[in-house]
Amino acid sequence: MNPTLQAVRGMNDVLPDEADLWLYVERTVEAWFARWGYRNIRTPLVEPTALFRRAIGEATDIVEKEMYSWRDELNDEELTLRPEGTASCVRAAIEHSLLYDGPKRLWYAGPMYRHERPQKGRYRQFHQFGAEALGFAGPDVDAELIVMCARLWEELGLAGLRLELNTIGSPEERARYRADLVQYLEANFDGLDADARRRLYTNPLRVLDSKNPRVQEVVAKAPLLADYLGEASRAHFEGVRRLLDAARVPYVINPRLVRGLDYYNLTVFEWVSDALGAQGTVCGGGRYDGLFAQLGGKPAPGAGFAMGCERLIALVRDSGHAPPPPRPDAYVLQQSDDGFAYGFVLADELRAAGYRVVQHAGGGSLKSQMKKADASGAWLALIVGEEERARGEVSVKPLRRNEPQVRVPRAEAVSRFAVLLQNAKS
Ligand code: HAM
Image (cartoon, rainbow, N blue to C red; front, top):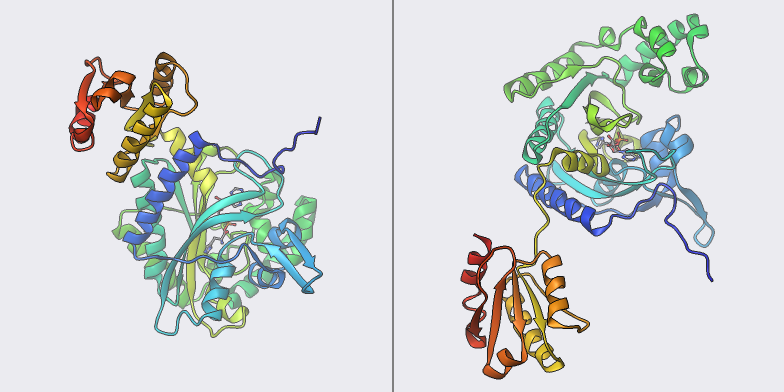
């Protein structure tokens, strides 16, 4: 016997019961993006490795150890499965001069790949919904991105998501801060773990969001980036905060929030839930005004966010607010092959009229077919017995209410279906 094969570790199947929930969330998210004026963009799953090295940064976890990269010998290219969507959006905007006639609001959805250690809420293939507002410089768009998330949580019936907000200033302000931070961390070297020591010279700001309590003790007394910000950075942050207050979206300022990707400046934010265990960040984002130039484009500001679909959907599932999956309106069953053809055409006409119809396949007694009809969750069974067929009729049996079965002429079955369905539901 051949050995069975399994999905790659950290890459999940989404089975139909779960996929109903995905569809509900995807449709909600699509409609929500449209209401906020964001337009869809689709970019390849595979990009040149250099794109992510340049955009996300050499000294980040993603680029150092999490990318699925390989050399394509045929074309002599270094390629990578995308670990995130921002770099691709900006690449595409530059490549196609998307900003030639003004700024753009874009959204995307799809799988991302990171070779992390799989655990609850953390996968190697995961999915994101993301938004990128390209070409807008002001704090108004930062606030828009944040407030639109708050409205999505409301629409999905999610409570308890906490907004953490910070500003990381300009690259110059950060460089000055970085020098002082390194000096401070060197003076407290004994309190750092191996990871923090390694980060000390490659990416010292990441030491700030260490999860190790011992390192956190050191970090608690470290200099604060906020004290290094100039007038313009402060004003930008004030602008964001004013609009969040106006929209009544509460937030917590987290001065240690720096995010794991290097392209950010000024505003950064995360939406965090305590209901997801260790992987509680549902959505993260911020401003990235240097990214266009870094990728060789004409300088342009940008800001955006991405949310993890698996984490978002876990919250929606646990909230109990997701609608039940749609039932079939009717399940067609029949007594013979001739009956099948009769039911086949009827089902076809009903679907053309917009109804959800499943026809029994595979034969069996009417009684056993009736059990399948019931198990399908359908509102109505449409029964094509020999007698019905001979008389040009169909029997209609409500499956969810204790109502009598009725016979209707086949010729009227489609036109009367709406009323029959209504009765079966109410
Ligand atoms: P990120 O923080 O790396 O940001 O990812 C955003 C979200 O994707 C996370 O908050 C989390 O919900 C989800 N996520 C990340 N990694 C995994 C994983 N291994 N398994 C499951 N979910 C995961 C970005 O990707 C930026 N591109 C966001 C952005 C857009 N910034 C500006 N524009």
